[in-house]
Each structure stands twice: as structure tokens, then as C-alpha cells.
Image 1 (cartoon, rainbow, N blue to C red):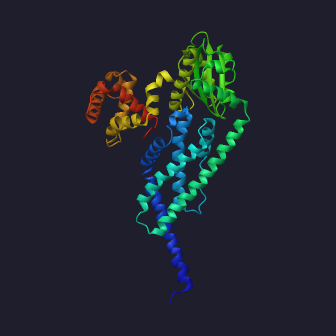
Image 2 (tube, rainbow, N blue to C red):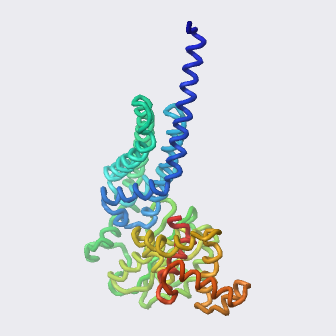
Image 3 (cartoon, helix red, strand yellow):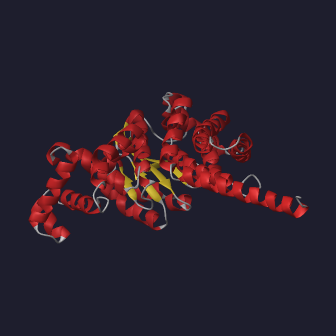
Length: 400
């Protein structure tokens, strides 16, 4: 005879069992996070316009950060079930605002979430295809409800940001700048900054106190300044004048900005309207590097190869697989070999000087360098540039 108490206990046991199943599925998916992140980003690139065409390095980096945050959100929801209270990721809200500022359409924003959801569903199916149909539907239903709630919050924030922008004269000025950057003739746009007959230096500053930090910069260096706010914590700047502005003359004025917690990306001096566009694109590329090592000054000329790798997913992945992965097979994960390479590159590839810097003897350095060549299957002089960029990507924490 089955009593009510037996039935209740049986029900509770089934609930406990399914909770354990959900948590196990979430744990198994977390173990595959790098693979899932890469698959989602590849799906976004294939299914929507290339994120790099958004024209804002902060937006592109924000897209990657958002993918990570939303995956954490989805897996927490799968583990807790539909009744669990998982907060909307702040990164997704911030990215919705960036999308609005960059004229990325809401339809594109929501399409990217739909694509990401489909990719994640494929991975979920691989982990739960052994479950009974009802349980399988419950897990997928939980994921669907979470994504629907997330897309609703993102849509609302996007619309609010567009409303705020529509009331702003800064937005109208921003639209004129965007038209110029896209190639429109300067004769059709007027905002009191000389384009054709001047030298320009593009700067992008990011930080909570960015407006305060950049105020008066043009006057301080004796240049005309075109400044455009991009949301609450980002500013696009151009400094213009009759002669190129030496970066060295600017450094002392950027240092206080860094002390205020602002990250600064700087292009190279260039002339005319074409140079105005070019120096801004260089600052955008430098910003990709700056966002990985915040609160400093990043100059494009110092990091152009690193910036190029950050802009190209295939290049970054290839550099990691060809030059870093073989070293990671060491018992210490490649720590000593990477440290040796840093010391060697820092002293322009002089083994004796590197030995002093690393506090080991020269023969030890030479043995380690030979081991690196064996692991890579190529001589260091033949791949020095690629190896140095791969090492710097690794030190930025890109791609694991």
C-alpha cells in the first residue's frame, strides 16, 4: 500500500534527482565554455554583419564580454531551474547602450541573442540527449525562458538609450561625425573644426571620469579640439593644428588622465580629412589593446601588430595554437619558457644580457631557447615577430 507520505517522499526524491541532473548539465557545459564562446562568436560573425564594422573597439570588446556574461547567466539558470532568480547581467545592459550609441539596429542586437541561443541549445542537447523527453523539454524550456527575459531587458534598455540620445544635441553632432568618418564630404558637414588644412591626432579615452579628465586638453596643448561623448564613459577626441603634434609633448597632459582612472588610446599624427579618419581608426585599434590593460596610455605605433591580432580572430587563434600551445605542454604549463622569452625579447634577443635579467647563467638561457625551438619546430630568428605577438596576446589573457 502506497501512502500519501510515500508519494510525497517519492516526488521530493524525483525533484532532488532532477536538480542534481540540471546542476550536472550546467557543470559539464561550464567545462566547455571556451569552445562554446568561440562557436557563438563565429555564429555571430556568420549570421550578422561583422562586429568590427560597428566602428567602435569598445563595442567589439563589449560584445565578447557580453557573450561570457550571458553564458554565465544561462548556465546559472539551467542549474537553478526556471524558479531560480538569476539577475540580468550588467554587461548585457551596458552593451545594449553601446549598440544604441553605435547605431547598431535593435533587430541586429536581438538577432545576435537568437543566434547565441541556438548555438548554446546545440551544446545543451549534446549534454542532455540521454534524458527522458519530459526532462529534456524542461531544461530547454528553462533556457528559453531565461533568454526571453534577457532579450526583453536588453530591448527596453536599448530603447531608453535611443530616447536619451534623441533629446541630445551631442547626438546630432555625433551623427555628423559618423557621416564624415563614413566618407561624406566635409563640405556637407560643419562643426567648427578645421579638417582639410590641418594635422590631426586621434584619441579615445575611456573611464568613469572621462569628461572631467579630458576637459581643457586642447587648450593645454595649444591645439583645436573636437570632442564627442560616446555614452557616459567614452570620449572620441581629435587635436588639430598647423603642424604634427609630437606624442612626447602630449604625454605629460595624459598622465593626470590616467591617474583619474581613464584609459587612453592614441593614434598617429596625420593630415587632411583622410588623416583625420586614419588617426581615429588607429586610436580604435589601439583601444582594443587598452581595454585589456586598462588605466594607461596605449599608442598605436607601439602596438599595431598586437592590435591587428586582436581585430582578427583567426590570426589570434592561430598565433596561440602555433606558438603558445606547444610551450604549454611543459610540466609547469610553459611558465619558465615564457618567462625566458620575455627576458630575451626585452633585451633585444641577447642571451647573455637576458641571463643577467633572469638571474640564471647564459647556458641555462640557451638551453631553454633551444627547447623552445624544438617545441615549435622552427628557429627563433625565423619567427621572432610572430612569437613575440603571440606571447603578448597570452599576457593580455586573450584566448587562454
